Image (tube, rainbow, N blue to C red; front, side, top):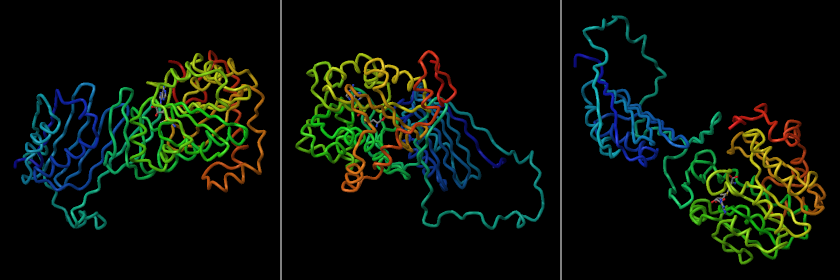
Amino acid sequence: MNALGRHILVEFYDCSPELMNDVIHIENSMVAAAETAGATVINSTFHHFSPYGVSGVVVIQESHLAIHTWPEYGYAAVDLFTCGDSVDPWVSYSYLKEAFQSGHGSSMELRRGQLSLLKRNDFNLESLRDASAKTIESDGSITRDVWFTERDENIALSLKHTGNQLYKKDSDYQRVEVYETLAYGNMLTLDGMVMCTQKDEYVYHEMITHVPMLSNRSAKRALVIGGGDGGTVRELLRHEQLEEVTLVEIDELVIEACKLHLPETAVAFDNPRLNLLIEDGIKYIKECANEHYDLIIVDSADPVGPGEGLFTAAFYQEVYRCLTKDGVMITQSESPRFNSAVFVEIYDTYKKIFGQDKVYCYLAAIPTYPTGTWSFSYSAKGDAKPLQFDAEAAAAFSKKEGLKYYNEAVHTAAFALPNFVKELLNTKPEHVTDEYSAEPTSK
Ligand code: SAM
């Protein structure tokens, strides 16, 4: 070789957009492409970005292979860089062209480090040897870092996972996926957004249920709209006084994915007191009888896709109609820190329907949700007040049920709001600014 390295710049066109967004397939293909060409793989790091796109690098003893994909164009930019002549990078090129089902590719090989242009420095190489340099894993195992990233406009959450995609199906409404993360266990995502993880789901599910149930001990009938992971009904069914719990979930694949891979969350789907309906919650509430439910929990995802309609005044008006005189509506109300505009707007809507002094906000710390600060709303049709509850009964309930987050002190503390949240709750949608918001408040 008259050069230190061979660098092939590759453009893969007309690739399957599916594959260009599949971090698992891309990581496996890049590692296999290196090994097929005879390279010794040292480690790999791959990121799957939401809403789409993958970046990654495979470090080999003979240098590296790198990639960035644009699924929306069916395009991948790939770098194949090898040194020495034991590895033929063109073998990797052919392997990847097939693996990415690329319609056509163009490439250019550069010889890097032309020896004729280099002057070898004759100094004592031993002094360069880094005694602490990591030796290649003797058992041939390589460190493979594969990351899932939920990226919003200004903030992102990245979670390392094992690279095993436990579940991936497209329903009529959304993409349903389960990843095996290292920090939070199995994680359910819908359209690339984190819904719940095995290691922090209890925060959300205990706070969205026990706050209303412990402050409204006479509730007999409860309705959950959304909540296909099963965590909310699991917690509701701990309350023996509930005679009927109805769950209206639009997407049965969410239930299937959770029964398979988040079984502790999906544990109550066979409970005889549960009335499970696979249906659009917006249609269900329109057809529901007046004053039928004591508690209605809107356990929706974000205001996008099938869940968008669950954030409208028309929907909340129907919820109000279906609540008994002393009924309560609970919603997951996004984060005051994440997008203040959405937060302010939905509280403004609740107040218009339930009344200015009938709407309360409470907070909880959920590590895998954007900003980690999440909120819930408590809207009373009658005179129910969230802080009028029997603290002793709440303490006993938390102990008896072995709850991990909720207790009588947390119940009270959750309503102790920081000043910026109080300020947002008194802000009109037309006056909201970016002051407290991670995401831009103007469209
Ligand atoms: N805790 C999660 C969060 O805050 O992002 C939400 C969990 S739960 C998985 C949300 C569920 O709402 C999903 O299973 C989704 O399919 C369901 N959903 C969305 N739109 C719906 C609708 N119109 N009717 C009923 N369920 C709906």
